[in-house]
Length: 202
Image (cartoon, rainbow, N blue to C red):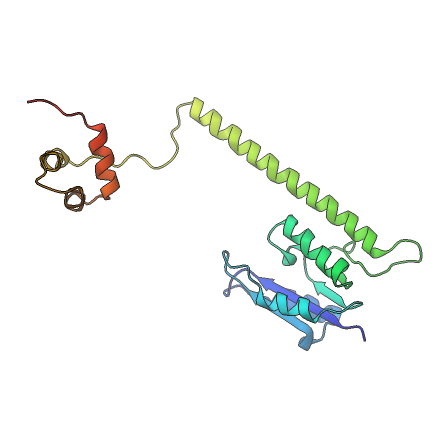
């Protein structure tokens, strides 16, 4: 017997999934057939989604509010689309994009073909836009560098006590760790400053 499932994902525990749940209500997804993941930005394990995949059977329907609920980027979205439609042989309905509906629409042309084509186009557009953004960033950085703009944090100022601690370190009366601690800097920073400070004969 065909089952209709719904999947809801929000990117943090503070976000409200109400809008997605309402859309599933309107479609008629049974409350007991809904899977919800609340994830942080760095955690994308999606335990509820994995349980959903294990539940899907051929002929079932998965309903989502928008295509980005399937993944963080279009490569991942395409992969999940393939798993659901080709490996699980289930259908997908994306509520905010009518063409992304793999259920059969007429005798000659299946929804799967139309949806796959639309997904490919979306993936191409997304990839092209990402590459254009990276290119604009590279060009902007290069133009700024040519204009004399320096990127990154400004160099840490050398405290006036550095010379005294450097002299003690060079004579062996203090370690680099002791000198760094006294100056309130990292040991690597002290050693870097020491390497670039010439030894002056008195």
